[in-house]
Image 1 (tube, helix red, strand yellow):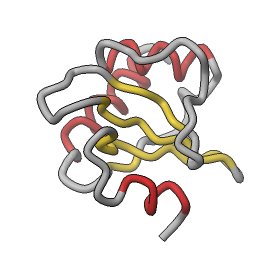
Image 2 (image 1 turned 135 degrees about the vertical axis):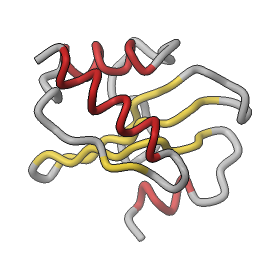
Image 3 (image 1 turned 90 degrees about the vertical axis):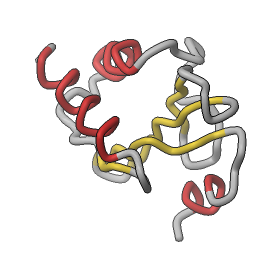
Length: 97
C-alpha cells in the first residue's frame, strides 16, 4: 500500500475517486465530506491539497484545475468503486486537450 492508499483506507472525510501518476508524482482526486458530497479535492499522497484553489464543485472543475497544472495528458486510474467517475474525468481531460 502506498502512503496515499493508507491515508484513504477507512477515511470518512476523503473518498478516493481516481489516482493520476506522472513520472514520480502522484495525485489523488477525492470526494470531500460525507458520501453525498459533490465537492472534490486534488490531493498529494501526504493528504495535503495539491494546489490552494480547493475544494472544487464538480469533476469539470477538477479537469480544469488539472489542465491548469499540465496534468491533462495523464490517464486517471479508478479508485475502488468509482470507475465511472474516473472515466468521466478522463473524458473531460481529453475533450479540452
